[in-house]
Length: 229
Length: 121
Image 1 (cartoon, rainbow over the protein chains, first blue to last red):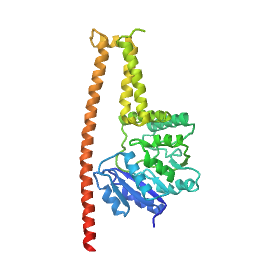
Image 2: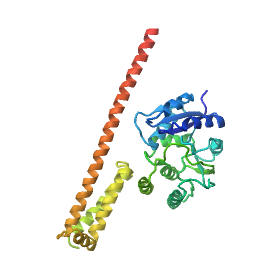
Image 3: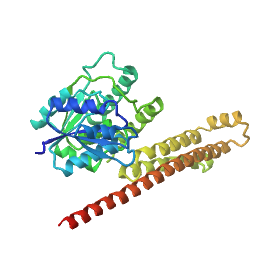
């Protein structure tokens, strides 16, 4: 029988870690698992299929936003109540999925973000990352009045209403911060809970210096323009 | 206020900024692609509203007629941007090709399956 929760794993060339992540998720919860293979050129898809989970192979690389939205569309079409995003690179600890789900199931909020503000001290690239993170927290607080500390965390769980919203509209690149804005402005409730995150175990981070400058500008612009809608 | 190349450029940049904002707001233009136009319009505004900066730049480049810097600036940015656009177009045609093939293969797969079920009945 189908579970009420779908764990969505967006994966782009994560052959080294995706298998282990799926095993870990299975150990900690009995949710259904969907891997969205974002046009990987390595064995990501085959490795995931070997773990007996559903795999969607995107014929082209869409980027994290497009891949996640494909997962959300699948969840909507199959009538799932909840969806959880877990990254394929091993940063997110599946042990905390139950913690994310608890406020959702209780109906307290519409989205729960796993936050590393109680974080691993030797988290790599912490300084630049923290400066950026602080800036987005500040901007969100300014524009919506709500403080969200780990705005860039991709470890999040959502309910059916937010699923429908995301199936309609989800930013194609760097979606994490922007969707918080999108949800808060439309009256959805968001809560953060502390989780432990690890430095990525395999693959490469998709964010370089030039990209992070673009990232800051693009996201800030999108947030300000969202206020005009 | 006299209408000259500077005031005209300032007015144009301001209107252009509003138009771009409105298009992004309506969702006709993506934030991603609007970023260039915002930077373009703001830089144009800065240059046109600041004739001393423009004169400084013209001396630096040995350009005798200062407003030419405005034209040069606009021309260079547009060149770079159309280059960027052709890269995007190439990438998109590649994706389109792949998608079309993928759909054709899927269609074929579905037809084969339908044939099989008909035969087995």
